[in-house]
Length: 638
Image (cartoon, rainbow, N blue to C red; front, side, top):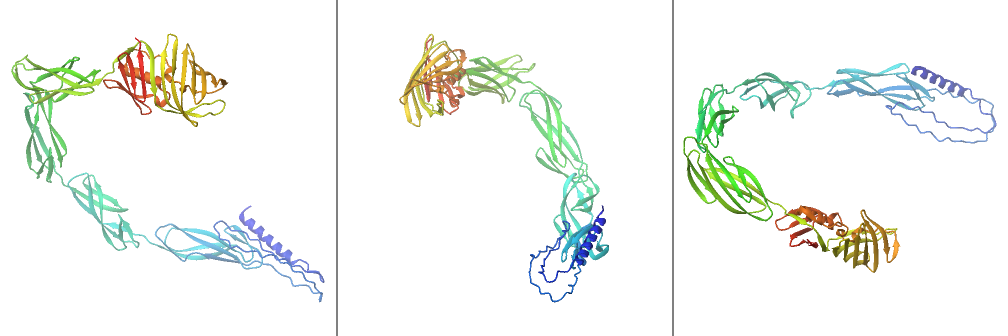
């Protein structure tokens, strides 16, 4: 069913209601009359309308005792709507863009005393007496001038005129002429822009009012000569580029093949001419030149021969010309061959290039080392004697080497390890170097058997939990001392332990033993005895007695020194740093006690654990000593 049919049905329904109201019987005579106030129903408009809200009066009932004075009928009341329509829209609209929407409002008002229906654009709107319905509408216009907006309500057309004024700038730029001496280039130009329209414009940040002409500075990119159209702030600018530039012819030359001694110099030359139509500004290897059209210049550049080979003499030209111009010289050098020999403590040979460095490395166990080294010099001459001036640590020695001859000399020096030592000789002002990297190498040790270990560990271990069915106290181990003795069938340990808990700080004693794959530990501290039995592989507590009473407890194995549970720390031809890492790991009760770095410094192994504690481990003399917050003496029995 379409909207028109719905509107007609609603209108018919309203007329029937009015008719039935007229047919109501009069009030019975001689009785009480009751009057009811009613509020008409209001139908809301679409979302764009602004409905006027009507407040319903509170029904009021009045009762009277009537004395019949006449039998005449009361006058009949007729209810009928009165629909009024208005179109609200601006009379004038000023705009700077087209097309635009003209927004207007269709106002429908019921001035009658009966509910009516207004059909607007095929949509019915029920309007109660006194109600105002506002319906939003719009119209698109594409040009300036007078336009009409309208509303068709119940078949009647209602119109209002709206005048649209359009404002816009009309910009025109004057041609720009550029004389360029370098392309491509970014050039700053002045553009004159006139506004022939009726609205102020903004071009490149400059305001141009109607009838004004403004000069606007801008930067444009010019790729080549010719005529272009460039857009600046939405304005098309005709641009003509005239190109003035230098052009060049050049030649390079000099000797193409020479036989020389290291240190001799040879020169190449450059000739360059400006064949263009503009003066050129040039920089040749940092020297500035100006060349007018048709003008030429000559310049030279020398190289110093260091070794046989091919040399490129380069002229680096910048400015109006950017180029690297090269001349090639092939050099056959009658040169010395220098060998630096490291004779002891190990033989190392180096053949450093002229003014260069060769490298080798040596390792030592101790902090000092005696180096014996020297040089051996030969030449590749076949027909001539070569004069050599050789400067070493002891001064300068002069030689004249015939073809096939050699010169040599040795030196002895004491060096510090670790570090670097550069062995250097100068031959005819040319330097030859051998860099020796000196590193400390930890010695290899063999520990066949150990009889006992005495130790004091002052590193704290915090937050140990003792659980016996419920959460027990938290213990902090502050210090552990003891002696670990190895027997043919096992090992035994005893010593003292200092712990801290909520009850305070207490020092007690402990003892334990391991035979085969099981062991026991007894701990007396704070007036209590804790007895623990365990297996070693895996390490697991199997029985706990507290003051003689059996408990199902989770007792930390860290209550005993970890070295007690570990295998005997022996070694067979093992680097000292690797052995110390294993040894200190065996003493670690927690993650912070584990070694973080291990180094050999020529006298002892220095270790830093994760807790930041530095430990020193000395090897030799039939024992191993640990110094620091952990001190220990490991007695080697063999």
